[in-house]
Length: 255
Image (cartoon, rainbow, N blue to C red; front, side, top):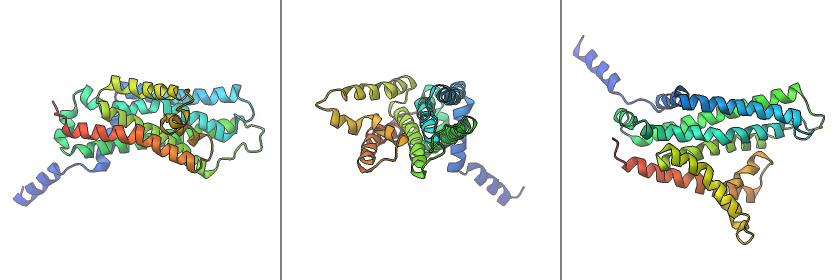
């Protein structure tokens, strides 16, 4: 083999992996592990269960497409972010960070790939939720006039809700770098903050910072104040922990 050919082979071998390839790797990580596989299976099973229960026990209004989709999306958004938590914390919990960051020294590229993989999974889950809702309404249509009415704005809001839920899971995983505290606090902190909303003196303030501010995204076409509350809740529950996580990941010594 000529010197030039050898150099070309070495350059191809040593070239850093593209962001698309890293994203595919992170997607594989979410489904290849036992925890990831069973979590995704549980999400799919819960979405199917909710669709069946709504069709059996729901009233005429509950069985229109927009309501069935809302129930399915909110159900998926409960467990799906846990996959995002594990996607980040597994690098430290299973001690694979040394391998990952040795192969890709730019740590932020690895985290960006995880975010893109999480967003891809969230959108796939949303498409599945939309398909299940549409099939259920087609099989057992409601008698309401707006059975198939689904405004484009509401479709976008439902997708955004799913994406924000996944991003919150990734952010908590990055902030704590350990599965147990990240998962416990992911579920526990919003409940604790939401409980404070029952105090009348601060209930108005809580509306701007609790995760419940995201719920209207799946229920109705939101307006200016609702969008502002979604923004503040996203900054507090997603942007802030993600920023803390990026700072920790850049500074932490990998062992």
